[in-house]
Image (tube, rainbow, N blue to C red; front, side, top):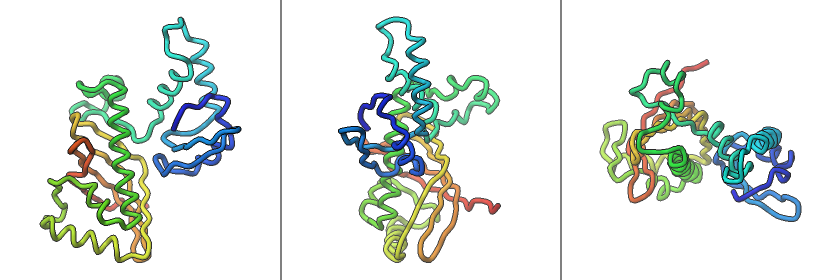
Length: 233
């Protein structure tokens, strides 16, 4: 969302973004004499940012190190960014807790590449949700891979007809997701698991959803979609 200095992180900005979901549509925020386009991608607490930047400044050893603001931004995003990168399924859970850095690092991707993959995959997920809520059939179907396999063992043409009806019939559709976790399998294959809350004028439910996504023509596409009704509380 552009470069901001710490003194521009006003409490009013945090208050504006506090209630927004990560990766919800960007908003325009007035900062002094300027306007910034802001999008919430992590917990937005100016106090935490100021403390982190101050700590980074105090521990900076020489001029060749990263500027304190850049170092702080990388640290906060890596620690708090949602969705989180899941440990490899081949690693024991206990080992993941004891050696988080190793289990969260796929062999072919460094930290910056992982972050870029997470962001790209999540933006694809966000576009899919936005198309769903807007009942935009064309954009919704475009989120799926050309090799997508419907969950209900129906052919693709029948599935598309069902999807078109389910998007155009309701008077409104509202979808939110919670606690997304990305599991990077290869550079072009990943899983996103999250809790999905769906509401329309005729139906509402909460499901646990797993999307298999593949890199196709440079974009992340949904190749498989699995849903399980969340247990009632």
